[in-house]
Image (cartoon, rainbow, N blue to C red; front, top):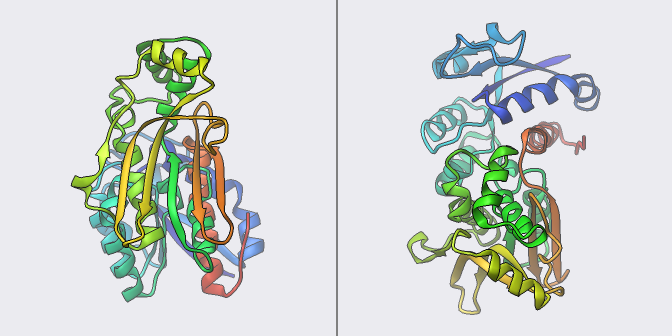
Length: 328
């Protein structure tokens, strides 16, 4: 039986989730794919700390060492920033490795470039985990786009902001109280700027724009507004009118072909597809010419939702190489 060697770049929450799922699903993946998967290298910044028992011998601080591993074919990337993530994945693609990423910051800016490079090198790029955690938006859009045209995408793409707005409405909390609770529960970072400012949702929206329309609007033309200016009184008044605040990321292709986008709080009523999306859930509503409006809802973050879709990307990639479709 053939053995495929894989590397994990970054071994925080998501990276550890990938490792656990690959081990737990090892026999099942072997039976379905007909291959043996081996995590051969884990790239970290500090090898002195063993995050998961039994992984110390796999850890390295050198990308050269990762790529020098005989039989390396798949690279999972769970690093936070654009660099060194893009440089690492570019090198992996040039080394004829398939790459699977959860890095929305990098992929929003460099995703099209990375995919073009992958085509030249005959490998695949998996990026389901960049947009909405465990919600299979990318796979669904790829299938829909085979027949349908997507004219507009609206999404709740940041679970932290959605949790805060939900608690402000359901519990009457202030923004500050809801944010603190989100941090206590691990939904928000110590520095929550990217979540509450709308920047996280914006990056995810740009990835969806590139997939749906083959292009992104000029980033400088996109209004990005966060939720930190919304008061508990505003939320209460909206609720009394049957409305809810949602932090909506929206991109649309106009009749003249121009792609426009915006990110910010919106009031939605019961007829709106994003109205029932509460807590840390994400949702994406796609307006299509044949299906109509299709809405996907699910968990937007966390170790296992994000890691699981990365492993699903891996199964899909290996299945394509073998000529069959795999579901796990």
